[in-house]
Image 1: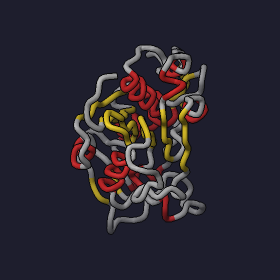
Image 2: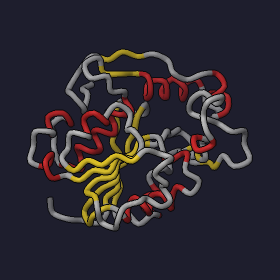
Image 3: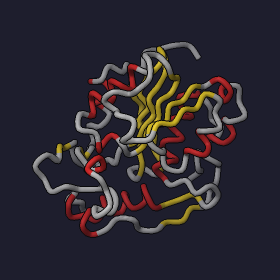
Length: 231
């Protein structure tokens, strides 16, 4: 496997899940193992985990390049590409902020139900493991589409259990990605995404969706395009 961020080929892995979260999400042993890889297996060269690498692969697909994300920073798109990153996209933020038109918006200060930018502002919107915390995630996807230029793309990840369908956690015990003693209600998991995760951008009006992986099923990222254009 090659890292889509820097091209590295050596990876290290450490477990990141805890028993409480495994129980709350009713994960099998094999599901827990690949989610541990998604979050805890990292490139020794740049530190990107598999989730970030899958997301970098989605961004590279939008750029239409076989180069790593790091190499793409030296291409012509790097000076003109307008990017909105909502929340820090794993370990990609230091690379993304080097693009000329980069804008950062912290979640939950940036309300994904009312993104504070005009229509058709950005070429790319990026967020990573954020949508599962948003109460009406289809509406949030519509907001991402609204601020994209025609031909632009939303690149994002959500924690995905590929062997089941998406489920709403309403009425279930509150679940957090992190220490529940210090996490705010904005970080409660509202939705557990499953194999149908790719359908929701379509409901939000995107015209096509592609799935990009790193060591499937460990990590997947979605690239949803806002109409077609010639790049």
